[in-house]
Every structure is written in C-alpha cells, then in structure tokens.
Length: 506
Image (cartoon, rainbow, N blue to C red; front, side, top):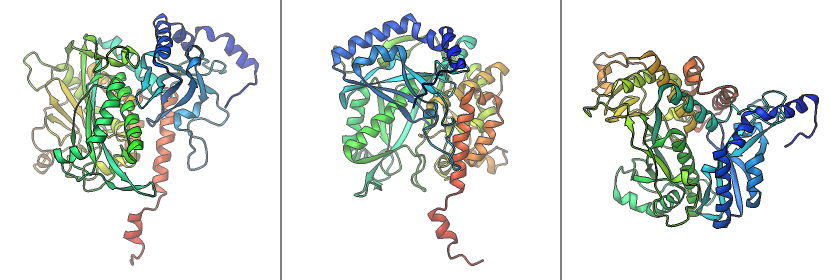
C-alpha cells in the first residue's frame, strides 16, 4: 500500500522533516553504532532474512520481512505499512476499517537494533522489534512518533516517569497457558494432560514441549527460572526473570511467539485464551511489580559460548539497586512508596481492568468463582482473594490480568496509577488479612471489579489518569477495536443460548 502522489502539503512536510522524532531517532550515535554491530553480526551468523516486527493494539505481532543485505538501508529508512496494521488490519461490524481509513498513510517502522535476535528454530532468519513513526510525507506531524504504537508509548511513558520520580518499574509476569490437542480437522480436541496442579507426572508428560520452549527461550535471551503444571488440562506456567518494564514486555511477546512455534512442531494448540474451560482455572498472567533506583546492567549469557545469537542488550538484565517498596526491616508491609502505589492501584482498579482483562472471554475468568478469581477491589498481604496482594517483601502482585494482555499497555497503565498514587500520596487503607468472601460475609463493603468488557471500557474512558496510558491516536484505535469486540459478542448466538432457550416455553 503506497501513495506516490505529491501535493503541496506533502512536499512541505518532506522539507520540514529534518527536525522530526524520526530524524532524531535515526541520527542517534548510540543507535548508529548498534546498527553497525548488527551488520557485522548478520554476516557472522549467516542471516539471510530479517523480520521487522512491531506489536499491535491487541498485542499481536505484525510486520514485514526483507533480505538481510538490505539491513543497513532498512535501519536508516525503515519499512512501511498502512497505519491500520496497528489495529490488526480488520473491519468493524459495519465494514469500516478499524482505527484508520483506507486512504490513511503508511507508518514507518524503524528497527531497534538492541532487539535483534536470530531465530533458534530457523537460524537463517532473525527478528527485530521496531519503533513506529508517522510517514515522512504526512501533511500533519510528519515523522512524529506514532501514538498508536503501544511499545513506543511505553518507552516514552516510562522515561517520563523516571525523569519525574527517579525510579524505574521492574515487572515479572506469570504467564499461564495451555497445551491442547489438535484433531484431524485441525480444531481443538481436548487437553494434553489431566487438571492436576503441581503434579510432576503431568509436568513430565509435557516435558518434550517444555524442553523445546526453554531451549528456544534461552537462545533468545529469556532467563527461564521455574515452572509447574497448573490445575487445568494441559496448563503450564513457565516464568522468566523479572526486568525493566519494556524488556519484560518484549520477552513476554517473544515467549508467546516461541510457544506458537513449538505448537506447530508438535501439532498442538498453544492457547493463551483466558478461559477455555469453565469449572477449571483460567490462564492468568499475574504481574509482579516494584519500583527501583539504580542497579547494574548485567549480561546473562546462559549457555552461549562465543558469539551471542543476538544483540547483547537482549541478554542483559537490570539487577541490584534499591527496591523502594521494601522497608529497611524487611517486613511484608510495603514502605510508603509502595503503599502510595497500592493507593493508586486501588483508586484506578476499574479502569486498569480494561487493560488487564481486555477481551470478552476475560470475564469468564472473573465470573467463575472458587478459583481465586481476583474480582474485588481490595489488597492484602499474601491474600490471593484480593485483586492486589503483597506476594513478597518489596513486591506487589496485580492479579486482575490474564494471558491475552497487551503487556505494553498494562505496564503503561500501572505507571499512570503509580504516578497518581505517588503525587497524591494516596492511602490504600489497611490490608485485608481475611479471605475476602469471609470478610464480606462479616459485613465488609467491597466494590466489585467490572463484570464485563463494556463496563470495564466505560470505567477506563471515565478515568483520565489511566487514559494517559493511551495517548493520542491510541485511545481512538483501542476503543474502536474493543467496542466493536463487545458489539460482535452481543450479536452472537452461542451453544448456551440454544440449550437454554431453543425449546423454552414461557
């Protein structure tokens, strides 16, 4: 998709593009050095093609491929795709393209060389994440950062937070997902294991898959630290060492891509869908978060000897420093910084729910009670029945988030809530030590989180603080996508409808 017609407006934009975000990004000396390092690495590793990828509003990986010899040119000029690629290139129920019209310009995707990595399952191919910009010839804001780029937004929101508070956000995710059988027709044919939590026997049944996922993950800079079989059919949780927010989001995205590849190799379905089975645990993706000052960038080469299969930054983790959530005594109760951040989360939990539970299926998870569903607006120390728990001294676990989350939007939303809590010194109240359901039976009044996607979207739209995680065009694209998802859901007749009402006689 391209537009070769020059107009006075586009010619003016082209002549004024020298001082744009795009031009400054390309001219950065550190990036230029990294681009040259990748050029040499491509030759040493024998890379033949490069996948230039970015993340859409829904968390999907989008992009283009180019032969490796074009790397220096693409690093300077980028690849171009229609703006609607950030909205998955789809139409709404009325047939309108979501986010951008058919006559919209093409975005410019410029690679971040520090994210360059060889694919372990296809060593002749590498991938690199990109930052998105408006077209150089746009009549308005030519060459500006594209505000519907969730990954680029997180980088900028985090940088602003660090500049004002002197702290950075570290995140560790617990991505639960399920390995399901694929039938002869290619469709879902049941779970690969029985729903027995923590059973080593069930874990071992999936070990060929686990070993392949771990091998690929380590080759791409993911430090896999532990895992277990959870309590749904074929459900695994494999965890990655925590790190700064953007790198953690990139690693979760990479982990999903790895699982999809391993599923193809084993003729399985790797699903991150929140609630495939009612009456069994869902696929949550708890976010363990903390704010830090300082720390060192430490290379974690794992088992790689000699040439790293990617940029050194991929194998680097921020470790050490001062955890501002921790009291000097080491007790579980967070320090004031942590308490104010919890206060921000409590204040904005309804809006955050739209980011953490971002699909209509997410609310199956929040409706199937009895599985520690985090549906109430409260917090506690080691209390799994609340939406927020202190999971260890110096660490908060946000639980109202599932495995189809867009981690870039989620981290940006948490930063906005933390910022508000710190600025206003919000008091979260006392932690709840009781089971939240028992506390409510005893008379405690606790607000429930939104019970469906529409309610969550309404809460988000009414919350200017968390809306700061959706700057510029992001808000329009996000709400177009998600309101349309709700509309399609409400316009669908399900098997449950037939079973319930087909022969109903009032």
